[in-house]
Image (cartoon, rainbow, N blue to C red; front, side, top):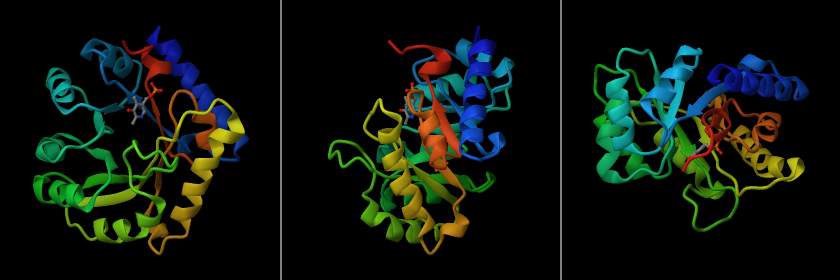
Length: 224
Ligand SMILES: *Cc1c(COP(=O)(O)O)cnc(C)c1O
């Protein structure tokens, strides 16, 4: 049952937060619903879940239309192509995967005036895998300064997807490195969001400061 899986994830979050000396409500559960049906989202919504994350624009828009009666907060977490920025700027509340000034500028200029500023996380590549998206740690300070100036965006923090590790201590390391780098930025006080952690590493992510955990598999089951 969806309610049981949600309860189980909330207890994992609570346990991890307590273990880290943090309050459980400092961690937001983002339900990652990519490839899952509007029906699956409806079940989670009816069980109390409000924040949903999607990776593919067209797929997300179809579900948003079907679920327009619901008060969902929509997060875009997938790779961003330039030709999709307008739809993202128009249809989402958060974007976790910004990794260039060009994409940020487009999102800002295309954000409709009647909507609140679009919440932004910069995606940082902290596993030194050349194939993964995200900026290098060495470029974080400059991009933060630039994105922080854009009028229709609100820079909230960072997102990371480290290379998978099964050991807790190894899972912690990249998050710890990024957390410390963010806290040393001149603009650190303006940044309140660490989008860290997925189904396989949420406890390690929470230990290292996650404020949003992005959970797909543990909530909706495996993706085909
Ligand atoms: C798919 C995805 C997730 C969810 O991963 P699970 O391991 O299924 O919890 C989280 N973040 C991003 C960016 C994703 O693409």
